[in-house]
Length: 204
Ligand code: GAR
Image (cartoon, rainbow, N blue to C red; front, side, top):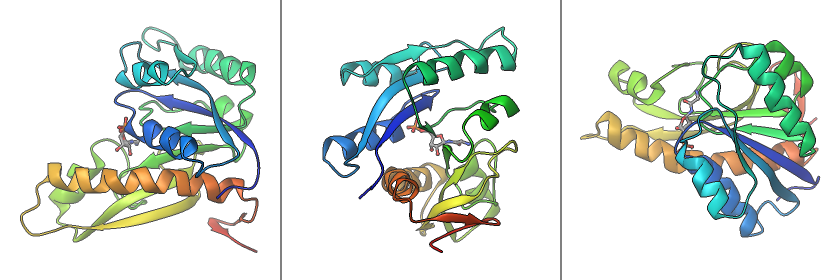
């Protein structure tokens, strides 16, 4: 699936199901040249950290509470460098990155968001979409820039809103697509075949 070798650094804050889907795809050889170099959480009790340890991966908690963003981010950047990370994947990392962080890894930070951006940025995107009455929902993998849920889109997947859905059922259906989308997006980035042309991510 991917052409260039890459050491991934995963940042997460909670459950970690997107991280696990990436790890599983790597284990199955679907992201052949990738390895997860380190998993970092801003929350020591994030279940995703425990899952990472159970898989034998390096897992580190760097608590954010009570610290300035710049100082916290600097420590994360140091860890990512220590582990020679060349692609940072935010997987349910519920914290804005500082400008310095974004500029340290230009075009090398991805995020997944559970809506078809630019609709419904921010928290509880699936609930926002359901409450708005959309008939098509979905998820977006995008590069991270200084604005919230804003960078260039790598890949989107759509999900129909079905009769009888509630926000919970819709979230679960979106999550299934997230688990497919993230690895596809990583492969797309690492293929070396795509370029940013303005806001479009295309094969020249
Ligand atoms: C996912 O639905 C992800 O798209 C969302 O948090 C969830 C994390 O789940 N991220 C955002 O809303 C970022 N703005 P996970 O911990 O099971 O991967």
